[in-house]
Length: 59
Image 1: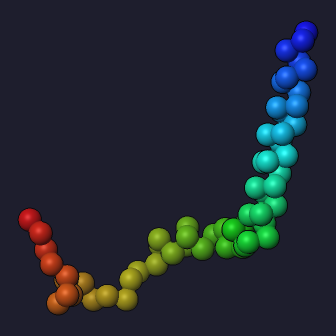
Image 2: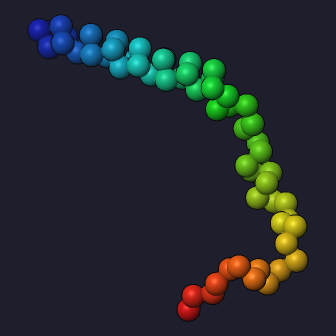
């Protein structure tokens, strides 16, 4: 039973840290574009194909 004296404050501290991290993520715009990366993978690139002159192919 005395272990609860240690576990409850640790749990509250970790919960507070998690809440602060979530609020920081909201304020910094981490959740603004949830579908952008998923849609970008489906779009074709503008390149015509092949390698560009500044790229080197290493075998």
